[in-house]
Image (cartoon, rainbow, N blue to C red):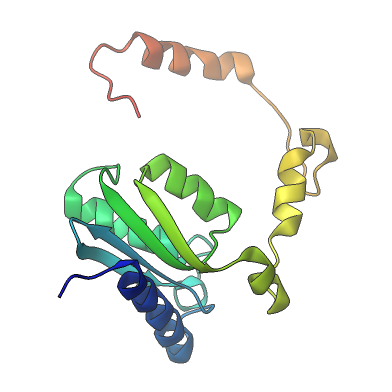
Amino acid sequence: MKKDHSYFLKRAIQLAEEGMDKGNGGPFGAVIVKDGEIIAEANNKVTASNDPTAHAEVVAIRKACEKLQDFQLENCILYTSCEPCPMCLGAIYWARPEKVFYALNREDAAKIGFDDQFIYDEIALKMDNRKIPFENLMREEGLPVFQKWEAKGDRVDY
């Protein structure tokens, strides 16, 4: 039986429900597929692990990268039960999968209390206008590390 996109997306939705029912966190699930086979799957574990970064997509990315022994998801597809939040979106772009499929959208998530619009709004603001203060200190002391990285002959770019 050839597994299609709906097969993997249904699995992501199932993981979302399973994690929610177990009390792991919000109703979100993710599956990562390579060559037609699931290589990692996860549900949200934010409250179970006391880790605000333990969203389903991030947990699945971590598992897949560990399995592949690579920091990128080349030729992989990510299936997620809901449109990724800004944090997960950043992680997805860093991991560089081939494509992402999602079931629910951000408006659906907002209706049940997972409204990320404030983060999108914050990103658009200048640093000194954000709700959480950010202050730039010791730039000159930090620059030599970046200069050393730039000159490093054996670095692995990503």
